[in-house]
Length: 330
Image (cartoon, rainbow, N blue to C red; front, side, top):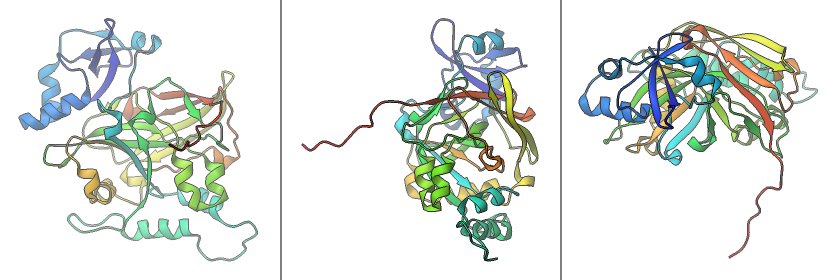
């Protein structure tokens, strides 16, 4: 079961169930997935059951919604400041090689493990604990709030000071906290976690800087459990032709951490249990065009797709211009 959020022909927010690549079925009296999730919690119903209760008889053209630029992100918060955007890295089998090469000091011939490899090895050994048992902590980062999340088709704008703007194909999870601060998982979507890999490569302590960039998710929200074996692709289009393409794998069969372990280590912090807040959390990647020496440029189009998530996520790259704000004294 997959949902989209969109703007209707009469300029109202709406939610619809995806029936096919060409058709969607709107939900009655539902303007956001956030609202839908709150209603499910209040009525103690599953999200799937509430969706079934609210389905209308109407059918709409999915193609028209996309062509007219009316798609929204598949989940958001009415106040973007209350949507945390975070993520975890070094969580996927095969993800450590590129990171280790980026973080290794130039000319280092020693066989000692880099910090990235050490972290990855810790995940392999303790990232999938038995139910109810504590697992090893993953790498964790803060990316921003809801204001940085762009809709499918919208530009990912790299800051003027950035040294790189590169894609990171990932799966993102979406969560909402109830009135007691209990987090509830809503579902999953494709994501482009978009980072500055040149800045990160200078020194791995610049990872936090490299992540403070926009990101994109969607178009569709997968309700229910995440498939264990996800096989997708990531590509970059330039001037209408494929510049670079590689498959990517995700799902727990291809990860060194379980989803539950990643969730536990995020929501163990009280600041992330504030009632009414929402969360968008990226689960990591193993495929980067940067690792193959690709240098992106304005106008390139990132495309990330996987059959389990329906329509592919596409976003063009833009470069910001103009001076950055400077602090003034009062």
